[in-house]
Length: 94
Image (tube, rainbow, N blue to C red; front, side, top):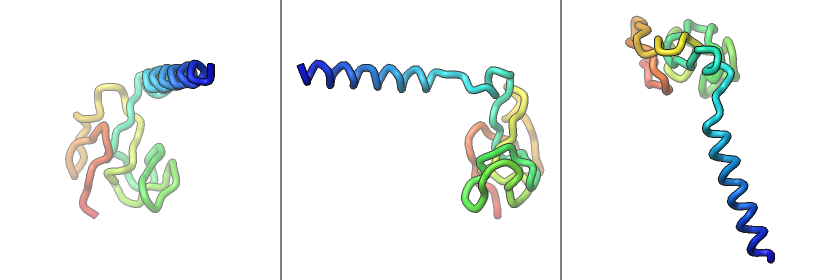
């Protein structure tokens, strides 16, 4: 009996994880996506990496680990003086 409960719990946890991963964020539902490396200093939307906390905390222009919400499909074509935006964090010169 205990093994059936354990197996059932494991299956429920796996299904829950799969459903959470498939969920669409409010930003994506609104036609937006996170674009790294395009925000000006202090104008990021969130997640600016080490030494920062959240929105408006990026330390330099086009910080590679800070993102800004942009229209869906425009991130990688957005050009900055340091190169295009990215859908994932990127390394930028300090």
